[in-house]
Image 1 (cartoon, helix red, strand yellow):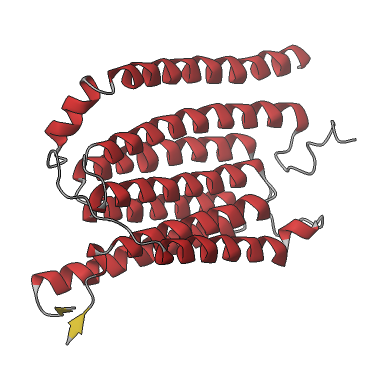
Image 2: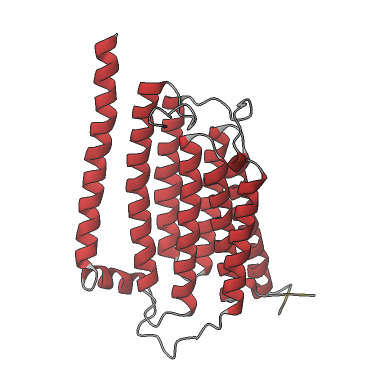
Length: 108
Length: 179
């Protein structure tokens, strides 16, 4: 019995990253609440990070660049989540709802 | 191909398990009606992503993934879910054209397009590595080549903390004035 060594090929990681990106995009369009959209956005960022790490492992001449880029993505994503969640809390205090269809006062 | 009953075969089995964990967590995160379950799915997905980073020779980034995403971001989202108290999505009657099959088709299209692009491109392996990518090299690069970005991201985080405090505090005084 034998099994393919999936963990050693670049294309496996690229397909996983594309799958996470697709699921995240689907959730971003499909979700009706702001927190759900934020969760889908985190999935998209995770897909991008996996891409960077895969290229770093298999293709980069300097294997520290991708790791540093991923660490920076994590820092920016943490800042983005904190700001987005405080905006969501402020929206909830004003509208008593975080549904994107209820927060439509500026809609023409 | 490696034999199943060996160290490489076992590692390949664990890799398949990690990939399934990641995809299952992502599906839970986008498909569950209650947001608290979606956050749990997101945490499961990030644990799987940390496993993938481990397979990509970066245990430090895997550790940071667990620490920052599972430990901080998911817990913060749980706090927001508790404060905002969203209603489940299933009983909403408002449906636009984007929420139905069109969003699913768009996601499938993106996945297929990106995978086909990754499969068709011929990737060129590097002729050599300038270092081994260990944690020591990462720290050295952070404090020499990337020290400017390293300092700037701390400023960004400081501004984000202050901005989050200001935004949350403003709403509190307003409701306090009303009551």
